[in-house]
Image (tube, rainbow, N blue to C red; front, side, top):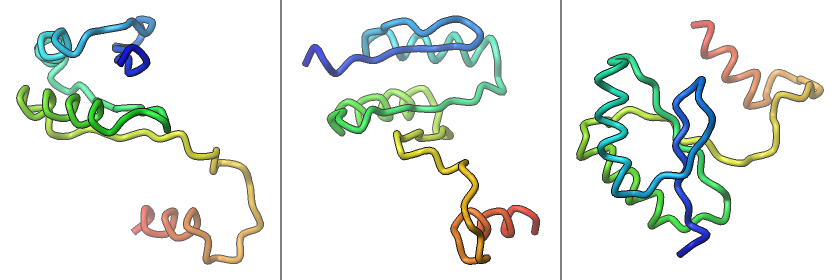
Length: 97
């Protein structure tokens, strides 16, 4: 589908459109340039899962099995009343251990 676009961004360069067929080569080249490359997939909430699945298949094929998945949830960084049971305070507590 035309709306199922893939954009590639290798900071500090701007985001560019990329075809799925080009992604494998781009990942290999990026990993060669930076062995400590950190990868994140940011999927739109309306994106078809098949597109994300295809991208993850390319990651597996290129041995990029560690990545972050970013979603479009509401910003949870806003201060909230903290009674000690919020997921943020629990996560912060776990991170300190």
